[in-house]
Length: 242
Image 1: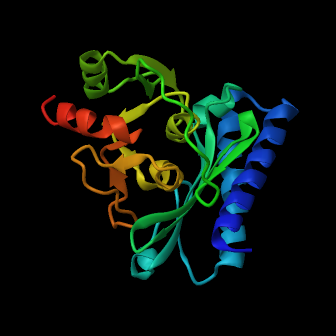
Image 2: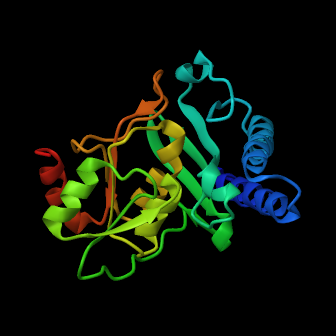
């Protein structure tokens, strides 16, 4: 099984595990989120350490260490991106499995288990036709001020959505044109989505236009832009003066 196949397989199996846990109905919303994070993380970490023992590993749910910094190949995972949405029985949550090579998000799989979908960097499809009025995905609970301001300047419709992975995949799937985030994230929030989005021909960068670089000592990533290429220059120029 090559790296891309492994990423997709692990994301899909973890997603099925989480759907089964949620369907059992034995845990409260908060307990379900915590248990789901732990179970999916245990599965993913064990599988990656078994299948790719020489690679580095970074997970939201695993204690970090400096060993990965000396590695060229580092798996970056988020067992549940959107734990709140998972616990609320919504569909806008995801499982992220990515491989960064020399800091570049080279391979990624984003499972959307609530929709029974896995989007992969090795199986890009054509982008659906863009809407005439641009649509911008934003946080359900705290839309970034910069995103709101840019949306007003370009006349975009705001679409509230849960996880970062779900938002990025909304652009891939043709449900929106722009995902602009300035509220701060971590490497596991965007590595797999960035790999999948880039493979599908979307613009992927920081909001100053610089590339997203992974496997850093400080895993905090302040901002990102994932959008259709025809909107990239306009959004980047607007956010620069917000």
